[in-house]
Image 1 (cartoon, rainbow, N blue to C red):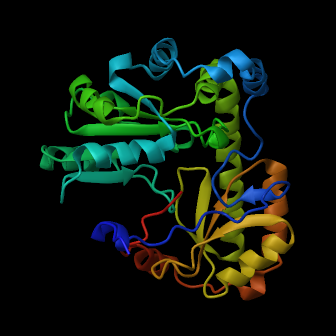
Image 2: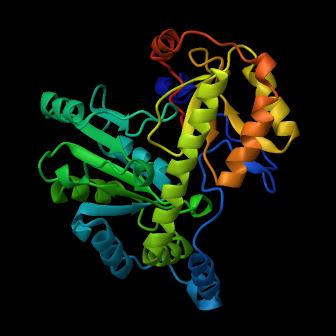
Length: 326
């Protein structure tokens, strides 16, 4: 048998979401729970024609418009096939032992933030190491270091339209860095990594920024509502700046997730990770979706293990080798 690299052999198996999620309340993978702006669907339908589908993608005009939206030059931005593609590109381009650091901000699965002072300290302490700050949940946190890319030559920032923009099915992400660093990354990037339909929808999506902002504001409101309900019943959770809340329910986490699934409510059970046993991650949706979740969740109160919140938080902050926090 042909053996892969040892690093690949050591990788933990990824557990994607269950199949057959359509029609259920999807609170398990941090997706937009109401869908993208209607105008994006109309743009997709316009692009679905034989001429468009038979041509290889053309990026330059779209890249300029998207770069303007993000407030960078087009030479400081690369369009990727989701953030996963951006991360693989960094690995392909730069990675040798101890050559890069990846930081999710807000973090996944906890939803917590790394203070900017700490990010600055990391960048200054490791000037010869590429530091990626993944801002997949920026639209919910409002905190970014994108403007730092020309201040720190070792900084790269990634964003995605899979979360607040509601385009997870199209797989479109963005990687930002200074011109020199981005130029090196572009050399290693596949020529047609992103499909034409994804680019067309992304260009339409940025025309509906108010839609995304309203959705993010709604999520923030309902995140606070869920946390108040959790406080009321004594459930420990991590302070979140993202579109989800990470909660501790104890050893019955798989059973609680199963009972919710029986009611067509999907949440993410982290019990497969030995360092995160007993934790559930719950995506925040609309007010009606949040009320439905809390009503069903509170029916499982007798299964929840309650403990000192500070101790639970300390226990959570252990190293997790899984590395898959989508």
